[in-house]
Amino acid sequence: MQHMRTALYLDFDNVLSGLCELDPLAAERFATDPGVWLRRLSEILESGARRRWLVLRCYLNPSGYVPMGTERRYFSRYRAAFVRAGFEIVDCPRYNTTKNGADIRVVVDAIDALSREPVCEEFIIASGDSDMTPLLQRLRRADRRTLVMSPLDAAKAYTSIADQVLNGHQILALVQGESIDLDDESGEITTEGNGIGHPEPFSVDNSGAYESFRSIVSREYDDAAEPLNLASLAQQLRTDTAAVDRGCGDDAAGRRGAWG
Image (cartoon, rainbow, N blue to C red; front, side, top):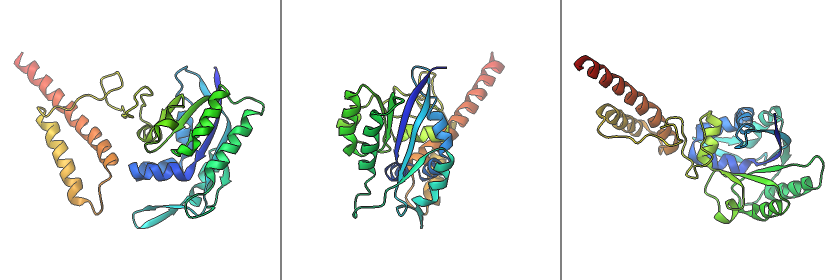
């Protein structure tokens, strides 16, 4: 089988913080079991080849944290999980109140990899930091393939240079084992759909699905002790309303058979 020799540089603080804004539970899975999404990432190439990881580096501020509910989840608690997945951990404590130096370390290490053997054919930059733009320009001049994994909206000048971009919703799909439409820039998750990578339209004429939709939203709103996470709610709605919709379709088919 053909392989793509790949280097992956993960700005852990940037990616985890961004994913937490979209879906805290999926973000926790990203951090606690990186081997799962790493295996899936090795398989999603348009050419049908697999990625062979020559470099796996995770840049992490050990004293950094993200708030989850009333708890602080310190990044250091995830260190062992990434070591077990084969990552080399690069500690990046803060230089000042805003920067931890991870972006500079990524740039230096990636440029260094350009001059080493064996040659890395592809560079994956997992960061939404547009300070990486000059790095992507340098990699393009060296005729290397680039993929950006950006959990939140990144500057167009940054993402337009990359050969491929995985946005936050596509990263969540990668973590959760859902299918990913690599040609869909909107980042729609396509676990349910019409076979061409787009979800089926929801029809309000289907009273069962509509009632399910309304009851789920009402229940979650009434039970919520804090602001709702819309990404998690949307995924739950897709799953629950699709099940109701299939059930209604089976009932309708049965009625047509009885009347026919």
